[in-house]
Image: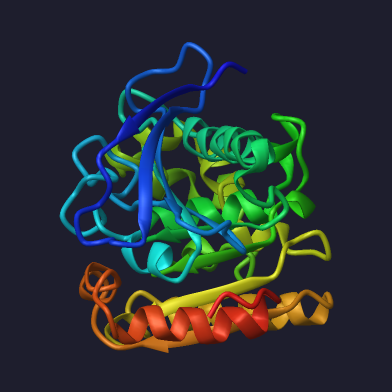
Amino acid sequence: MNLFVRTLVTLASVTTAIHAQTVSYAEHGSADQVMDVYWPRTKPAATILFIHGGSLQESGERRTSAAYRNVCTQFIAHDIACATMDYRLAPSNKWPAMPNDVASAVAALRKLLATGKGDPSKIFLFGHSSGCHLAAIVGTDSTYLHNVGLHTSDIAGIIPMGCTLDRDDATLRQLTPDKIRTGFAGDAQDIATFGTPETYLSANPASFIGKHVPPTLIVLADGERFMPPVMEQGSRFVRLLLENDVPANLVVVPGRHMSSIAAVSTPGDPTFAAILAVAALTLGVAWA
């Protein structure tokens, strides 16, 4: 893959960053298949790949949306490289275009780090909302990374923030395509995004828990603990990972679904502080 790289202006609020690069991570990719990579002045101990939310819809957010545009700021200030990506969205693109794009971005980022900019083995997927779902599914279902010649062991850890991880309690209720077919047929957005109930259920991270999953830190806001059942499903997800000897943890941060991520770029933000502190223990990297 020949990476298209363009140097960008540094984030104005990040005095420790040298510059950013916009990288096209897919050969002959669309305008959505790009990521901005921000580098600290020193060689980073680790690299974050951030995946924005927006319900997987073209009508939703992008990496440049207000809630996400500065998400890399504090990572850079702590000498952690940070990439923030866009990806193909519905309804123009159906699943699995989205997780395939995340896997392609991982592969491109590894190649970039391997040029001496960092450690390709220290990439952490950090996603919020539907980006949370993507970080979790790429970290659990090895299909997507296999498609680009990688394995889940090539990811140092995943940080899913603010999403349900067992959609509709599918594993708990042992849902099958036939059981959800009628309800699925009445949901125009799910039809536009997933196409079939079979594909919808195949996108469930909890269905793929096993020893192959990288270390996991689940993050959720205080205001989204119960409805939807983010904390209940997250806690069950952590327990199952621990039963498989995978390092895993869950942290509750202040705020609500969007406010908890929108302030993560602010110095002293409790969400960022919690992620650093708990991730250092759970994910096994001294990046605080």
